Length: 224
Image (tube, rainbow, N blue to C red):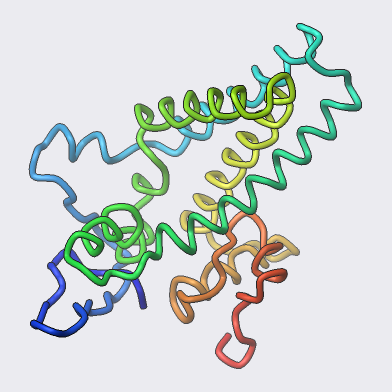
């Protein structure tokens, strides 16, 4: 597995650092920071980031429509494009940022803080999303990036993108906090469980399996 422990990788001269795999723990929580304030801020209730991104999407759509930046049909199209774009970004960030190879002590620390801690404590409900302060910063940064890059189209695209973000956070929380439902929604639980417990080099989509199908990182049925 690419998830790492809190200990720095063992480094031998002339060799690539190695990282011991971690065994998922279903109770407890890791301490990421010695500073008690930073440690407290690293935990959050899922409703806060979900609410912030959902509100960003609603406000963006409302503002774009009421100020004449887009019509109803265009708004729907931009919303769907933004939503699709989020699913791709979710996949790429999870695969190439959260699972960056821990080839140096610095990379190992970065990977553990960003994502490895979640693999070690997958049931820690308070670390399934970014803290509110960072969430507000990310939402604001996304607005400026979209506005600068897409002009008046930004409001529709941002609405779909941030709605996708809120949906991702909600789905991810539900997968880890609740038992799988006995209906078609179970596919989300099954897919993500493969990533956590059997094949963490595949199944990077959480809110959607679309890009795993397209790029070829669906879990092997043989190992399922």
